[in-house]
Image 1 (tube, rainbow, N blue to C red):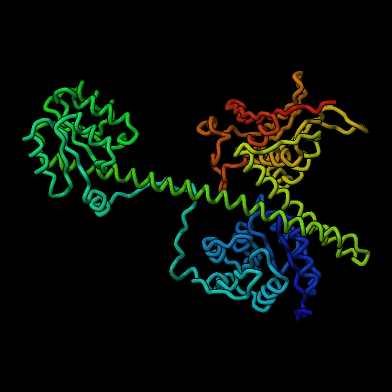
Image 2 (image 1 turned 90 degrees about the vertical axis):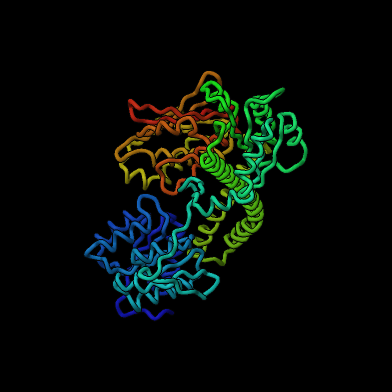
Length: 559
């Protein structure tokens, strides 16, 4: 039994998942702490703190709707009445930037999911033994507050007033770019290979003399010879200086052929011409040349232009290589995610089977059965997530085999709305969920041919987006229509028009705007899920009414 102080503490447990709140509360009760309140998000927690001044410890999740754990922590520290209240932050993520952010906000302790009863008890004992003021909490924050459930070992992190932790790059936060410094430019152009093409030997001698100290210079005296040279497996030049006026084949024709050949199309071409004619200049650029130099060439101008175009070409090549590496890494990550999801199904299935066996045991108490029901519910939710992840991968690969069945969309959408109830209430949205036909016993129903899990995920993503996009006191209206062509339509209308710049690519992968932490996968997966169920999905934005309507059409169930 824990050594409980004379004055028993009151705990406030904050988490948007009821099963996680129940788990923390059960752990607290097992330690002897039986006084507690619970909240589903940060805003509700603040209301409880105002209402019940007896609360002495806050245990909060990080990621929650309406108000996150870090926002709750900052609000507590900014409040005169309970600014020194101990706060234990629980999270499934442990990025260094998050630890730093929580430390600077004044967190008392930090605990990583999944955790053991022992690790939770150690945190609570430390908080109760030393309910530190906020100044000390953030100044003396240690990495030991962020231990995992599998180990009690930890490493100290630097306090916020010491050397700061470097910002970590975030995916999608900055465009991929190279900063061209003088040093980088020198390294990029070092030992570059330049090919000079001119039918006049004296011109070649002049150009070679100007450039040979900095570059490796080759020469060709005709268009035919340069094309023959580059058609072999010889090393391609990094840049070509090409005369326009040559017999038999002029520079324009040489350039056209170079640009039409995938092997040589990316080589920068600078035209050399004795004719300063705008028509020729335009023709050269249209063929793909990067620049023009008028003969006789000014040595300084020629060198600068050659160096600049070599730098740009090398930089572009480096960006292409980086993009290729990123694409390969993304493919590898998707493969690993797929294999991991596949391997997870067996242990999750084991958890479900063992839970069912224990639930059938008459020796189990009611409290134990309640816990087992929470375990069973969580395991089934996880199994659905893993199954959906595998199914989405198969859909992208075109290998998913759909097995439709008769499903009712009304309870599915009603469940999604119930799960988003906290955000809906917080924004005071006007929700309309009208009747759409009657089934047995007067219950409303909307029967379609599809898959229950796929429809739950699809409408979950669409309604989540609609709630997030709608402003306070906006609307969320859902309408059902039986069409004469044997298909049914579900229209979801929310306040707020989709920005014009993303409308055409609204359902593309990774497209998102204005949402912190948004992945751009919600609408993309929704389109996949609709298509694989022989359905369609469409988006219409109305700037005049300032609203957006998402329309999903699926085959109606056959009577």
